[in-house]
Length: 110
Image (spheres, rainbow, N blue to C red):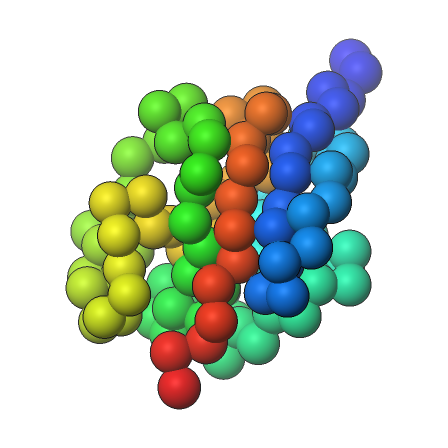
């Protein structure tokens, strides 16, 4: 079985847009994957949906992603800049759901 290639576009905190090609890896989360691609990801909680350091905005493709779980929604509520298209990168799996997504990393809350 061949791994699927996933293409997504990331706008970093400096406004630079870059297309990424990732290999599908359901056990990996997007936050760790972005760290591995040299994006600054503070990730204070280690991917447990507690700190919101990996907050991002889904600018395109939100409808193809799995719905956020309660833990993610509760953490997003702590961010005054959270929007309807806010997600935590640590809660997004590196799967074909991300193919074609455009996301923007947001500044840290504090």
